[in-house]
Image (tube, rainbow, N blue to C red; front, side):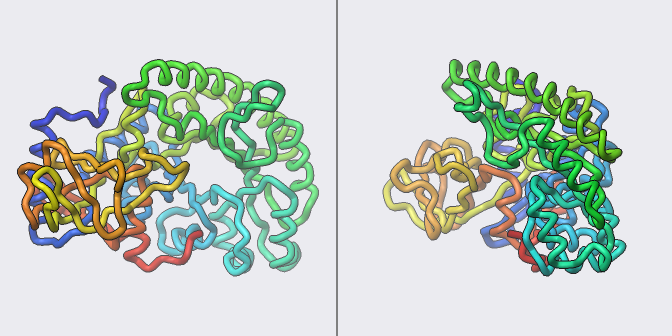
Length: 411
């Protein structure tokens, strides 16, 4: 088994349950925890996988300023990949980082106005662009002569296109797929006053965000790994050419790529100067289907058993914490402790109640708690005001989530 994978022996799972129950016995569910030793182990392992390239932490996968600071305090981590401008401003003002890239184009005029008016924010935050339309929006909010220069990063589409473009493997992000397209936008940016082109990013979602070892499907896993290897090889060549073409117009400060699931592969690209990761810090359930490296599960949430409809089924209160993405069973929270529990196929995870069955149900009584793992990482923080940081069988600290800090709206 790959090091750090989540398939812990039953006795380890039992000991983990005992520790989490003991640490949080005075708290009523729902309660979220982060096993801080596992978090730190994952952070160190990600640095090892990055091959000496700095890691920019993906804030949407963490959603706690306390834990973002904890990651950034470690050697090998530097800067934040934010998911909105309002969030980026909040993080700068809170002293989390002075190097933040907003990973997606935005149309928040209020936040743009605040960015344009502040020398501190304009120096710390970089916007993502893939079209001159986004530059026009900035100019409409604040004319070039009436604002600080706005730092921008070009996003190159990282998807794999086969059969003459008829087959698209990856996600639908930037319209810029070819080096020449990136160069044309670079020329347009550098010709316009009020903007500074400082970076290029290409996120290979078909590698970083797709598990290549689906349980019980070895042939599918092998096919996925071959496809991903082909995609990485193609992207390294295309990204290298795009970086060279864009550098004809601007001296780039950074070239960003990757995610937790592709970190080691992306780091081999000589054109990439930094990589991004975040989900691997928490080790959510989706990463159980990765072959090369699986983070140690570090984030959990507990729900209370409230009834037993049949001798073989228990019901917990709540549980419908469904992850984003293509709807399917892999987006459902996974009952983890005690071992031997699973969701009912016809009911899944419900907003108000979630029935569970399996061998683990036999020993559960009303008032006991069941520990779940979320399918993705930071999304669990949308349901919780705080994460309890557990070391051993005690709470070491409390980390407020974005929700708990009543942070600005981010989406």
